[in-house]
Image (cartoon, rainbow, N blue to C red; front, side, top):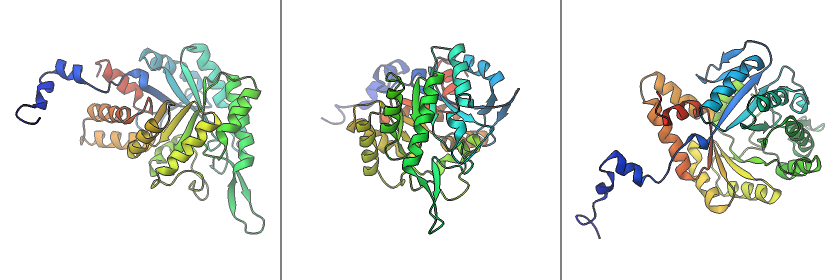
Length: 332
């Protein structure tokens, strides 16, 4: 049947009717909020390219955590900015490193809050790459050594779990990283700790502001030999399938906005929860447009996050989480 018997507008006549018909519902339970912790005291330093996002020292972290909990946000993604970097990123797996120290403190302040620890070396290496760099003697070419990197990533994951992390979230994109970390966690007695794998992480141009925030810009070359080509989606399914076989508990697509087709593909292809990372560049574009009066920030953010969930995301990592949670509660 068609018009005039079928009139689609009948189900849009009022706010109450639209609420009844709504297919996708966004709540604070969907959000994971990224936090950047650094050394020092009395540091609440706004990141220039990410208005409203801060480097926080440990002495100011508790107030931030309590604000997050009060908004109904149930999970954070923890990133650390160390005071020491070296070729192997040893601060990443230091039992007294910034991520480990922050994790212990957060679990003391808010034991119910899920702490997800980003498991990578890029913030901790002096070269800014996500693994160990090996220089071939014959050619002088520097490459990220996949298998040598795995051992350090396992040490990092176990160290984070020992500090109290609830979820290990490896973002390094080394081949075999999920299997290596799963084995390492299990051997260390952490069989109950889930792995949120950055399964599909593209070599994206949307990461610029994050690299400022995490001080993780590569000092040479790029990450295209281990992060994915933005043109590929079948490859995303192969990457995700490998992680499923190796023991991942959740699968991530990063970035989100330009890759919602990939989010949908993972949702339809696997029975694990899918996480979308609404990355720094996506956040910064909205903030810049809003500051110029070109868009309504609240409505654009909520529409964007709803679109990610509609595409199939079960969870969304987003720097908008605090604002979005307030807006969903009716606060301005």
